[in-house]
Amino acid sequence: MIEAIERAAVEAIERAVIYIPPDVKAALIKAYQEEENDVARAQLKSILDNIELAEKTMRPVCQDTGTITFYVDVGYEFPGVRYIRDSLINSVRVATQKIPLRPNSVHPFKNVNTGDNTGRYVPQIYWELVPGDSLKFTVVPKGGGSGYPTVLRMVPPGRGFDALREVVLDAVYRAGAMPCPPTIVGVGVGGGIDTAIFIAKKAATLRKIGTLNEDPELAVLEGELAKAINELGIGVMGLGGKTTVLAVHLDYSHRHPASYPVAVVFQCWASRRATAIVKPSGDFQVIQ
Image (cartoon, rainbow, N blue to C red; front, side):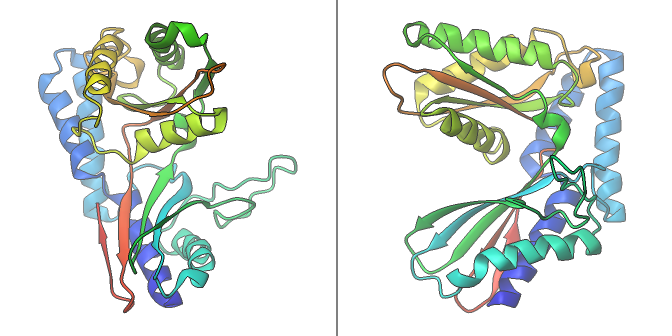
């Protein structure tokens, strides 16, 4: 079971860093086809050429192969629970050498790079217990540049949606070209400060472009925010054009009456993810 989990994780990491998921690729192609600004269109063409070259050469689509994050759903009856953590950590070490990945794990005080993309709390592993006997995990190589302009604001609870819109638009405006637009913007509302950032990051990285929010009111808000952001004219790589965001994805948590946290997390155009499903037998498949 140890070998199966590790092999599945290495394959998922490799798939994630090389291949852009179909929904993201389709959104980029659509943005290119609809763009009228020559500079922005040229940038989108370069992005699409880069995606094609990565697929042909089997090399990472971006030099920043990110901090590896695993979102794990493990069945109550999965027989290899005790092996998951160590197998995932070791898979990152193996993938760093095999693919290869750029070493991105640096001690915050000593400024020493571990060289293998592991370290204290790295890779990041988030767990959820679910019914069943299988293991499912999604690997997200989250780039550092898109994480830099992350915003967390506590807004007056009574202002609600109005304050939320202001926070999101201000965050995108201030971010400018830093997160390598066109981006996917994840917005987390409510909960505690840690919850808001967590669900914003999940919304930005895990949810597929083109899927609708389960709450019809929030689905409308997402569309309104995306339209307003694109009207800012920041555009591809901050050079102008019609597309600053490919999508806005919003999630929420119930909150304390006295607080209203709003988190904004950016995912760059190279939105990378792959999912592995491991059966009790040790058989596995990797999908995007």
